[in-house]
Length: 439
Image 1 (cartoon, rainbow, N blue to C red):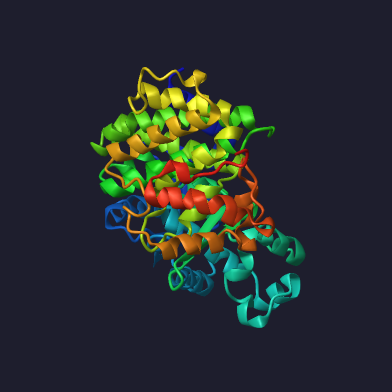
Image 2: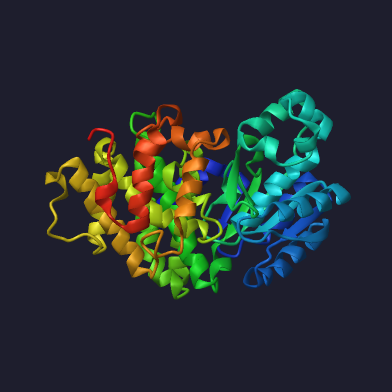
């Protein structure tokens, strides 16, 4: 079984008939929509390169007798105003289902919009105990499991969603996450809840052909971050071996095929889609941590994938005393692809040395793509470091600290003592600024 076939088997075993993926599968949209009724809202991507595929989706809806109204999707990082605009349109039409066609931003926006249109502010105030001035906003839902709590208290169900992915990146079409950005303060926050996982999903990997170069690169690095962050935090967890399996496979699919995917080689585009989908599976069995947490505070200067790519090597060094087996799993992959010297004897290195070697391999990989490798190079400032440190203490983002292989407790000063050094290293590129907990 080759790597692509193995990935297909994993995804089929995970999602079953609820997920259709491969080439020329957009025609499945109408069939999925018809399962829920004969009226839908079609929220289309705001990206021009993806809009050309809407015609095939509309033809599929017509063929299955499903009427639709079209709503414009979300901009990158789904700003709040886009979420509220989409929610207003869904509330106006009251459809049997909602189809989100786009990348992570549009899909995340629709997930959150459906939540807003399901529960009345009075219900939110009563169940969650929040004031009326925020009960009709998205803020009360940030955190883990709050949508499920509302469902259980009210007995209401969410409008069914069909997520049609157009970018090999976040795997938002497969997951329980919705990222929403407040552009005024430059901070992204997260809803984490099984209840918002789309019940139906489609990803035609051929749609990604012709995607902008930067979008392809950013998406690939987001997929790598999903795999690696979960695997780093899997030590001692019952999903460790499964995480190891999908991380090994996902790394190979993404790293080995990315450059050919940029040339729109169809097989490479399929491999990249499979690799980032495995990243989605990864964040459903575990959770991301430091790099994703930091990326939420960099939305005004960096795309999400690029922010994660910069931060990932530095957290790798910080976590190195706790992730030796993980480092010895991905290190050889980077070595085989030429990003770590062939002469390096990885198994003979100390934990810290091994962490730095793998981190430098990740940095070399980033360089090969033309990515910046430090926050300073990417245009971040000391103000962004301060923002990341404040965000790490936000209770609504606490799940990221809990997912770390080296737990950090803001109440005992761990953010200033340890995370500050990691972020300073990421800003300057100086790995010596990172102090591990055992040092």
